[in-house]
Length: 161
Image (tube, rainbow, N blue to C red; front, side, top):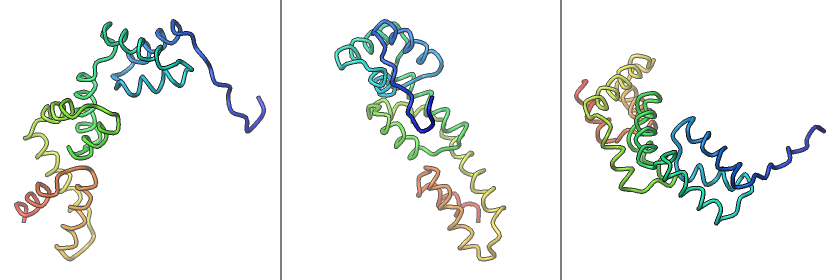
């Protein structure tokens, strides 16, 4: 293949696409939108895509609730994301608001607070600023960027003083 040329787009039949989509969903939990985008990328038309989605859902390969819980739990435990950032990411994957609320409620409050406290403590210890106000501000900004609620961040910082 010549350099600089794009790989030709593979167009699949609905049967081939179903098999590939089943493997795609079996590998890890997926949102309906991710699977929909993948099916369109394989050259299927709207009616075929929606039909395959219905089949994947009825066969248990695709379940939005299961995806939302796995996504929220994974991003919290592994990446140490806060609820705000997880909520934004789930909205970006077009998960419904009730499912987002349910997935966020699945995060243990005590574990959530403990994770945030550890994150802040680590950030404060690594800071080279001598001014405690600047040190706290930088630690708070970091935690807020990771998706933790500003009120909770500042509350914990006040408690640690």
